[in-house]
Image (cartoon, rainbow, N blue to C red):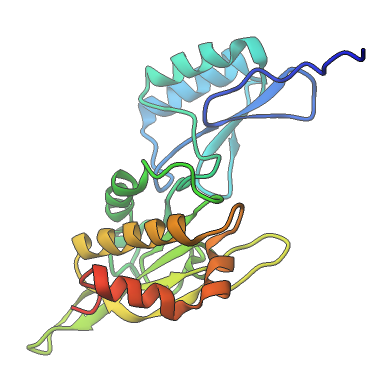
Length: 243
């Protein structure tokens, strides 16, 4: 009988196979591209000890170490943990949330970095989705993080309260994606006020997608199949999106 091909040793979230034999990429998860100077030192030590002394910056504000040998992935993860770093950002889950500098930019209308931390805490445990799910936050309508090209895009804005005073608000887009068949996200027909409401709305969108999506279907394709009205009806019934 022919020999059964040897399977790769399963790796934890954040490691994926390179084309070269016995080599892996380690994708280190950062929230909104934020990393401390102490973490940078740990990252440099990890690159020298386990990689080729090189760190690759990803398009989604994370970092990767390449050429990690199979037998050394566990040791790398242990070293990274000493700096509060961990591999992640792969698989059928809510991926790393990206954000612009927000209030540190002269155009920023919201604190994108702080919002990313809040949303990461709320969304990080959603696992086993139909496909990957991405979130991007832009502090203003300039849209530097391309919020219209991701599953949930958040853009800083202003909304007048009952007294006519302009307050912080969020413009949301849903169903954008890149890839072979890119789609532009659809703007939700309301502005969202309040960070707690924003977190509720984002979590509800993820849950709606989890319950409605077909296997390997991105949110963009779920919305194309079911329509934005289906999502909005669910949001209106389950959140304070209209408040």
